[in-house]
Length: 317
Image 1: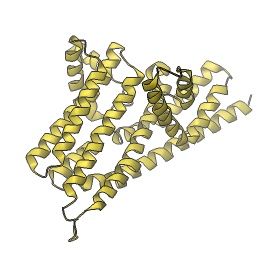
Image 2: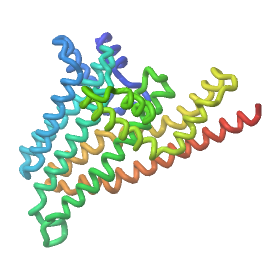
Image 3: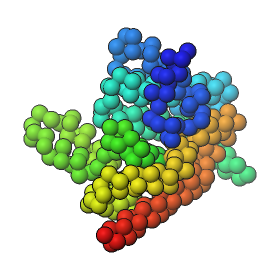
Image 4: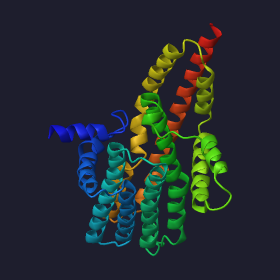
């Protein structure tokens, strides 16, 4: 048991970035799965692919209005999430972390919820709107499109970026998956003109993903640039900046957790089980989006204040 607890702790990204529900429920189950699959030398990416099919199955179940089908949807999505936890924990424990795995991990979550949004649309198209004697029709597609494309995907992307920034300051480059558009573009340009079709598609999409994250975080980009040029008392200065930044970033990690999986999954479960699935996309557009706006604003303000401190310290030299 002590060995399991030690392995569980080692499989965390960090205590700062782990959510209570994950620590006490998802991660222990994920670790048990990881230890099982590792005996058969199964690669983490295979587990991620399994999670994609489980998430698609969950979406299919949610398009039915009956309680039994929706309970199966809940179970399938929970197991998809267990597999998602398994692949990351296995990768960290075995050293099998790859950029492809990171991209595949993000892609899997997008597929799960895309299927769920489509399921909700199909389920409600011919159903009446709440308090109105009129079928949803095309409007449920509009609602879910706004929730998925303009809220959910952007919220998850930003939450992931802030988490990787925090891990970078906490553990350095080895403990973070923080990437840059410039780096990915350089890798893309280094690929041969022929014989690298899939690699080009992969790095093109990943470079765009990184660029979109950087475009939405101008204050952090300025802070990162300043850190690269700040040389005075290098180690002492870096330690001071690191601790100061982490103190401001740590409270925001709870928002990055809320904006990833658990909260939106719970709301999705409840709304579908209560046969009111329209509540879920509406929740994304309102509550989740307000949290994302607050998180973004606070993080940018943190970066501005850190940049001002660095500039003042540099002027005092």
